[in-house]
Structures are given as structure tokens and as C-alpha cells.
Amino acid sequence: MSISSRFAVGIHILSLLEINKDGVNTSEYIAASVSTNPALIRKITGMLKNAGLVNVRPGVAGAGLAKELSEITLLDVYKSVNVVQDKELFGVHENPNPACPVGRNIQNTIGPIFSVAELALEKALGIVTIEDVVKDILEKENK
Picture 1 (tube, rainbow, N blue to C red):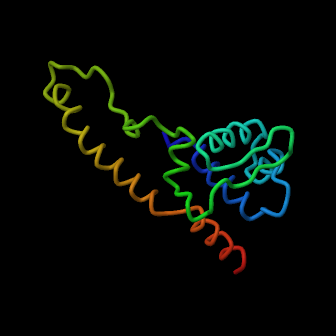
Picture 2: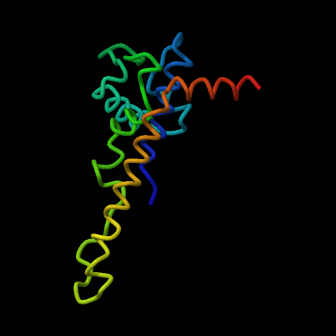
């Protein structure tokens, strides 16, 4: 299994809102860029709105950024779209066989390793901003 694609779509939405800031960013327009349906875009945009990352006006088509690009980290996006519950990035199977030495000890052995890995991921996401993403997109586009 992979991390929910909501994370990548959330980054896509925020990047598009900046790059097309002078246009009208309807859910249909964004959905065409993502190659998905507008209902999914509205759902994820709602999550981004609830996290204070985008502004959406009822009855008016379009959305815009609620913060400066440099203030929105990938960690903000990751948390806003409910990719995983806190401290549950790596699931550990429940009820291993206590009669087996591996089953008895696996959870306590790999749990701390998973916690360290999750903290490292969050630290890495916390230093990259949507501004960094947009700059990279524009550099690639202008090559």
C-alpha cells in the first residue's frame, strides 16, 4: 500500500492555485489538471480549507491560497488531507501469535523503529514549502 494520493493531489491543487492565480480556479479546472473528477477536488479542497491553507467562497467559482507560499509546508498539506492518523503511518499487524518468539516480540521491536521513521518523514516534509515546489515546476516548465 502507498500513502493516500490525497497528499499529492493536495500539493497539486496548491501549486496550481499559485501558478494560475490570475485565472479562475474552479474544481472543474483543477480536476482537468489532476485528471480526476471535480467531486474529489472539492473534497480535498475542503480539507485544505479546514486547515487554513485555501480560501473558498460559497457561491463564487474558484479558490485561492490563504497563506503565502513560503508559509505552507508539505507537512501542513500531509496533515491537512488526513493521509494517515497520527503515529499510524506504519501499521503493525494485530494479534501476532504469543506462542512464537517473533510473534511475542515483533510489535515492541519494530514499533520504535517505525516511530523514528515517521518522525524523519515529518521533519523532511516540514522543511519543503509549496513555494519550493512551485519554483521547481516553473523551472522545469521553462527549460
